Image (cartoon, rainbow, N blue to C red; front, side):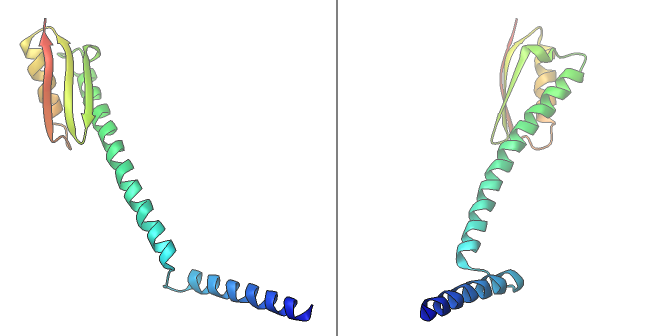
Length: 118
C-alpha cells in the first residue's frame, strides 16, 4: 500500500513540476506549439472572411450615402477581395458611379460589373 501511495505521489509531483516549468519558462511543449500554429491559421482564414464582409459593408455604405446611386437595387458580393456588383440601375451614370465607388474602396482587388441598365 505504501508503494502505491509513494508512486502516486511522485507521479503527481512530477506532473505538477513539468506543468509549472512549462508555464513559467520560455520553453513550450511541442503539442502546445502545434496547437498555437493551427489556431493562428484558422484565425487568418477567419480574418480574411471578415475582411470580405467588411469590404461589402463599406461599399454598401458608400452607395447608400451617395445621392446618385440606388443602393437597394445593387447586390454587392465580395470573395477574396474581388467585388461583384449585380442588379439594375437607371442609367450608365449610375452604373459608372457604383463601379467607381467599389473600385476606390481600400482593400478591393478587382470589381466585376454585372450591372444592367434599365
